[in-house]
Image (cartoon, rainbow, N blue to C red; front, side, top):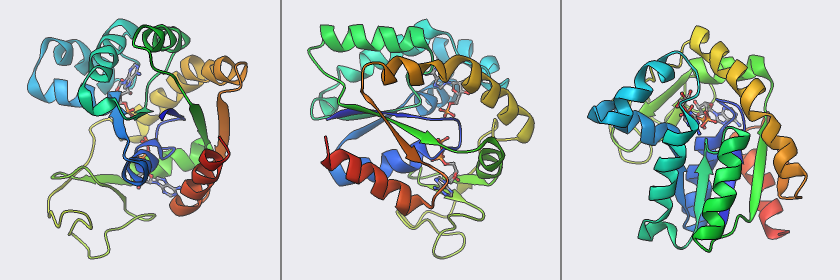
Length: 216
Ligand code: ADP
Ligand code: AMP
């Protein structure tokens, strides 16, 4: 099964992708994570993407399409993947459709996770991540069971993203509304789209997705 999680920054795509990945043995493909790894490693792509990411703007279509095209060919993707944060423009969605045809794969469903902008700002500014395993947390909505210790790997180091500040979040939301929202029409027209209420708590969002998957 191959699926897309579509939604604004902070909607819960990464959170749901990790849960779905565990439940259905699917690989999470986050272009944001891949780009951050490239920035940290100082690769050519990382150098090109760094300033754009810090400004909360979208990296060029060519870069992200290239990254995803290579990643989908890896053996671990053969049983299924979850695209988290890709595609983000109509050009990326068209390129993905072409890539999937070339690679003899298909897209089963696109979940749009809907959340109000003001809630997104609260979600993003309170987000932190285990530096060891990448598990995501929130100061208010999802604290580790024991303060300072990751539930998943018992790690004690946590990190915050540089672009998770209110000013950059506002640019990221503008990019979402202008460049990514048209994808709702793109996928809606081909009946591949299912919308879920992302304002609910994490487990309730997950249940909505699970129910929709059983109906496929
Ligand atoms: P995205 O990958 O879409 O940017 P994340 O999955 O990282 O979003 O979620 C953003 C923040 O909001 C994280 O701190 C996460 O723990 C929290 N979060 C995710 N889903 C929910 C939810 N349904 N209710 C409350 N907080 C949530
Ligand atoms: P994310 O981790 O999904 O919030 O993405 C963080 C940043 O990475 C975004 O603000 C963009 O600068 C860049 N990025 C991630 N995915 C894409 C994409 N599909 N297209 C363009 N830029 C992206």
